[in-house]
Image (tube, rainbow, N blue to C red; front, side):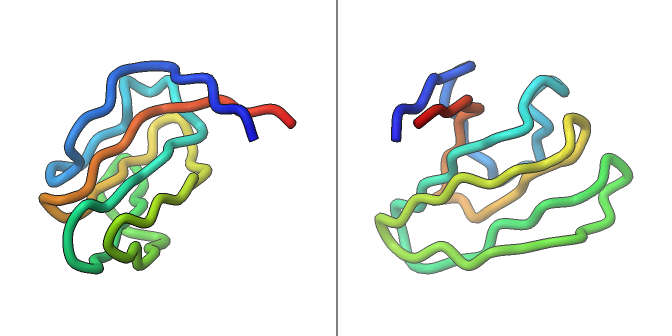
Length: 82
């Protein structure tokens, strides 16, 4: 898989929408297993995923949806192609 980075990687200990421009976000966890939450723009969580140490995932979200994780998680907006 080839990833096209669409912005800078940032910590997600505070909820972030990635400026309402990202549908796909790569999340990596560099600490103990923890949960990343996906929420509507009003803060209501509608999904979550546990991410293990050194594991990364790509999640799809709505443009205005928020992602929040532990202090050891970072995320970057991406596009992909096969």
